Length: 104
Image 1 (tube, rainbow, N blue to C red):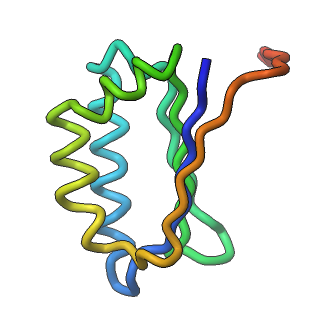
Image 2 (image 1 turned 90 degrees about the horizontal axis):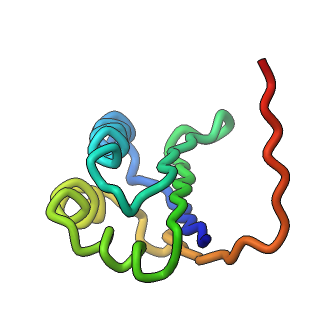
């Protein structure tokens, strides 16, 4: 299993549009069998700062996800123009330790 994270700031005034694009992307994630988890976080302190977390079974699933039409439409085409590009960072993590805690 791998987890891909992205952090970035959007340009001032683009917060609502970026939120909409990311929300739509997460909704589309339910259609992608290669994407296990898709979560978007927004900083309480700085509303232009976003953190995206996506989890895949393996590297091939991640590569397949990046080639989908929805990824290209919602993320590449629309969101990238709103980024403060110097703040954009992506990293890939391998799962090495896990404890799933279910609270009811």
